[in-house]
Amino acid sequence: MSEPFVHPYIPNTAPEVKAEMLAAVAAASASEFYADVPADLRLHRPLNVPAPLPAEQDLARHVRGILAQNRTTEERLSFLGAGTYNHYVPAVVDEVIRRSEFLTAYAGEPYEDHGRFQALFEYQSLMAELLAMDVVNVPTYDGYQAAATGLSMAGRLTGRGRVLVVSDVLPEKDSKVRDYVRAALEIEVVPTVDGTADVAALRERLGDDVAAVWVETPSFTGAVETRLREISDAAHAVGAVVVVGTDPIGYGVLTPPALHGADIVTGDIQSLGLHQWFGGAHAGFIAVHDDPRFVMEMPSRLFGLESTDVPGEYGFGDVAYDRTSFAHREDGKEWVGTAAALWGIAAGVHLSLMGPQGMAELGELLLARTRYAQRELSAIPGVALGDGALHLREFTVRFSSASAPDLVAALRADGIEPGVVVDDSTLLVCVTETTSAADIDRLAAAIAAALNTREEQAA
Image (cartoon, rainbow, N blue to C red; front, side, top):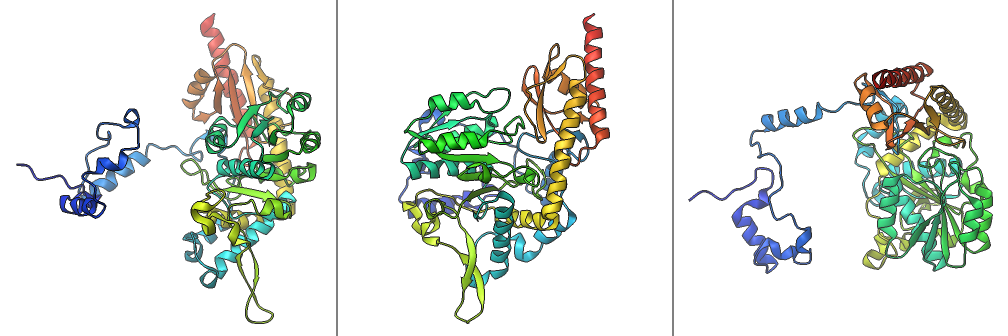
């Protein structure tokens, strides 16, 4: 009789340990724990994973082989964006967040963690200044959750259940947000016109059952919404909340949504001092005005100045902690979970290094590089811009006689990642401050050559 299998990485697979655990919860087998999972959702077979390697050196070699297959955007000329961006990260950002007091920035109490809490307070303050808002939370998991929470807040504030989205939303973000809010909110799409909101169509759909108008600027395609004030006025006229999803990278030059009537501003801070890594380091922010109705609906932690028992001294701690899911547990309005605190500290360091002048220069550079790339690519015969809106960092191009997936495959062979395929004829192209004019020229030349080759083959 063969010995029972004990997984070298999972000690609880030892038969005696398993039996003891099952006895402690009065279960006959582990399958009892999955009784509520429908049969058609179960795998009914072992996972298709390699056999375990008992020797550590063999496991290390195996993992290194997998990681070696990755090609970073530092090795290839990349125009990939769609939510994760190749912005430059100053060396001091990495140096600071690798410090031991920050690297484990997970949870803790004010009496033991003044340094980290102050760092997050500074991050919140810098973000509030950039966004022209008063209150910014400790980071949530990512921008997707931040958007979903912003919409959920609007639903609770208004007691309504309909959301109108007036922008092109990143498909993955749209999917996650809908999944998060589906129990309480129904999201309806108001189609865009030439890349931005159709305000007339929005007005026709607004009513006293609308909880929020959701605006993404820049949108999935990089279009900047220029009629936000009109949108806000129309939404407020029926008692709806304006929730804006955005990227903070452009607000050194662009007017923050709060100054155009936005009530809740959400987004992701990946562009502020965070690398792309293997899919990006992401963290979400939620910003509101200093209005108790909105602040008390924020389920995540806020850090502020706290007085101490010693006159004239202060520390940093939770503000209105009793409104959070951490305090209410299962009775909370909404569960937030672990804050991506380390990434908030990284963004804070980045913003403090850049300052207002640095962010202004960065925003101007992004606008200029985006326009240059649009001009160079649209000058190629058979290539046209997807719309006529103002764009920041990203834009789409359409090919009249070529397949976008085929074009991507051709340029990859030349060491270029030209963008993200939107559909068979459309490509989403992204440029950042790390993209030089020469890089854009190389992309344009490669696309032109690939299209010419295709025409010659067709002839």
